[in-house]
Image (cartoon, rainbow, N blue to C red; front, side):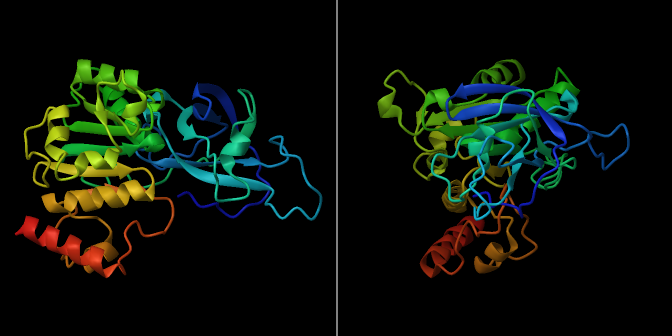
Length: 329
């Protein structure tokens, strides 16, 4: 769940240069900041695949009429959004965004964003940030398979990771990257054509799934929510779909990166505990009795501080502890 940042009137410093509507409630927005801030040298990429930028809009300037001085809503809204494009593509950044139909806030960013068209001005923080990168999780030199678990628009950072490697080396292999991507319907599987091409030409391991296969009888791929593909009774099916050997999804052979709603993250952690995957979160590790000497093997992107797993849920924690300890020996 994305939480609103403190709101004030934003000074616009970027332009929406392209908008690709994949369906009425799912779009790709390409934004060009007026300036970018490089943390490294002039020859260093200005962001690392897996990082995010904060974008925002002012309420009134985005077509949301003011309701008088007593309107309790903030004048603007900002949200962190994972970058889908690669740093090698230049200073225009790409965001993969779904319209929030039932928002929890009274000023959802997507309700403003869906009103603007290319040429519109907006806010985009000039500094990319975030540690959900291969470098900051398992390390760039780690040879293990990177299992990327993506729910909906949680696919964005993994697109960036795969694209960047190919743009740096057009002959690069992607056999060590495995992406499972879930959506409600096949039309909502954004970037599917690109990922299938990367699978065919560069060895990317890609397995899409839809959660409502009964409504698409022509669909011949995997069915169910993406986290369900990692349930103990389905994980070998998923390994086969990814071209992996049965039992290969284990911590000495693979590391897991998850991006999506908190429920997706939590259930993926739960499902993989019987395979011995150790979460990165320190508080959760302590609750599960995992010492600091044990390296983490499952990581996730989260923009708020809400625990993905409630460590006060004694029954759940005891079950996970038992599963992990049995798997780890």
